[in-house]
Image 1: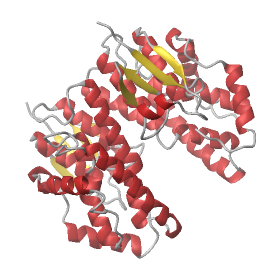
Image 2 (image 1 turned 90 degrees about the vertical axis):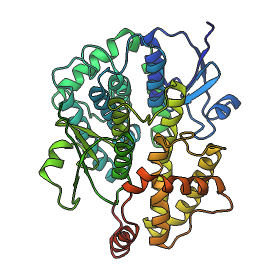
Image 3 (image 1 turned 135 degrees about the vertical axis):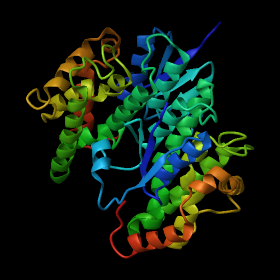
Length: 222
Length: 221
């Protein structure tokens, strides 16, 4: 049966990369289209008229939008290498932590810690530390949030596993230290080493250069 | 097998209301515990240490948090009335609209009635935009879920019920009946559903509470 899977994304976006990670984990073939977010394509506007954002997964012509919604769709459509557990309680648990990571504009929060104005920064840091501490506690002795294997929460946590480190390097601000968050740091190391993940991370230098250019003083846009 | 289902909530919160609607649709027996959010119980703090919020569903001692997460849990745990469709694409569509309502619609509705003075006008405009988007999504369907109430309808209690209550309590007009005929019909059908009716808090009491809380001092959520 002919199947067409298309992904409209943006190379530096963790949201877009989440979808690629999931597709890779499941071994799904797809065609990737890089969107210029300053000049959105007619396809993007057609497939996501409400939010006009990436990522958009188009499966046999039908668009699915919003990274967490797409991850669940992928898991329900392609059954190999499950991203979510089977048990309803454990699924609820995974969804809770995925939401937790995404909520309160995780990316915006980390950006505020690194590039925000003085007052904003202190408050943003407090919030970020609190958030990271909850995640540190949740990890316990597990290798990944998903247990032995990468799951929904790990994929959603790509912001923390990779992007946060790049923000830190670009801005000189340190948040995820090994003293404060030993488990989370170990997790990040494991995460970025996993093959399905490694292949889907944007090149570090390119991301650093883009961040420094865009945020070194100018307003951050998502 | 004895099963224990406990719901910690507050009457008046649309998030709590959603869970009651879902449990009733599924015919699940549950114990309801009303929380005083100004004086949170040790149980609430134990079950939801991260957010310290309601609703919390405790099923056989295990807590489930966040209304959208709880709704999916309920649908996966108890058979019978389906809250989400079976087809993955339709499920994704339902989840998209549920998120849209939570992230774009309700905050705008709340701000337009109870936000700070200078935020209100902009919020009113935003409400008009998002309600039109929902109007278009409804198309010819009776409910967002099709023939029957589904996830999106349940989540949209903030439009089916809270919106009208806020309008009255804050004396703000948000629902333009000429521009949004389908949505108005949907609201009527929503409010006529018996399980939904049973789950709604008393309107007058809620209006009095809102006026008291948000007009006499600082607006806090």
